[in-house]
Amino acid sequence: MTEYHSDAMLNHTMRSWLWAEGIASVRRISGVDHELLYVASLLHDLGTVAEFDNHTLSYEEAAGHISKVLTAGAGWASARRERVAEVIIRHNWTSVDPGLDLEGHLLELATGLDITGAGIDILPQTFLQEVTEKYPRGSLAEEFSTCVTDQARRKPDTAAQRLVSNGLAERMRRHPLE
Image (cartoon, rainbow, N blue to C red):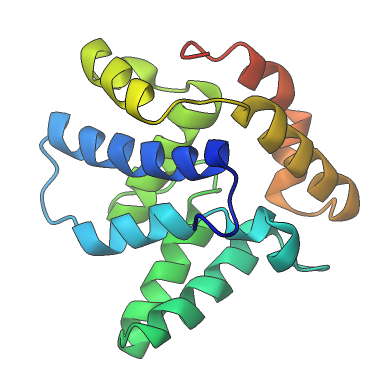
C-alpha cells in the first residue's frame, strides 16, 4: 500500500478500517470477519491509483479484481477471494444491507464517514480525534475528489459519477474532521 498510495490515501484506508471496527463495536455487531474487513479496507481504493486504473471498470470493481489477485498470492481460498472483492465493490453502493454483507455494510458506513462525514455521530468524539491524530487526513479532500472527478468524466456510468453529482468535492471540503 505504501508503494502505491499517497500518505493521505493510505491514512484514509487505515481510518476506514478503524471506523468500521469502531462502528461494529459501538453497535455491538457480532460475526464480523475481522481479517476480511481489514484486507478489504486496505485495498478498497487501489483502483484509483494510476497504475491500476482500469479504462472501463469503476475503481471499486478494479480494486475488487486486484484484491482477488493479492489474496490468491496470500493463499486465500477461491470463495474467500471472491468475498473480499464483493466487500470492496459493495462499499460504494448507496447502502449495503448487513444481512447481505456485514463487512460490506461496515466498510460502506466507514468510508462514507471518512469521505463526507456521513454518520460521524455514530462514533465517540474522542475515538475520532485519536484516530485522526494518528492517521491525519492531510490532502485527502483534494486528492480523492480530483481522482474521482476524473474517473466520473471518463466513466460516466460508474459510482464515481454519482459521488461527483452529489457534491463530493464540496462535501469533502466541509468534512467535520478537516
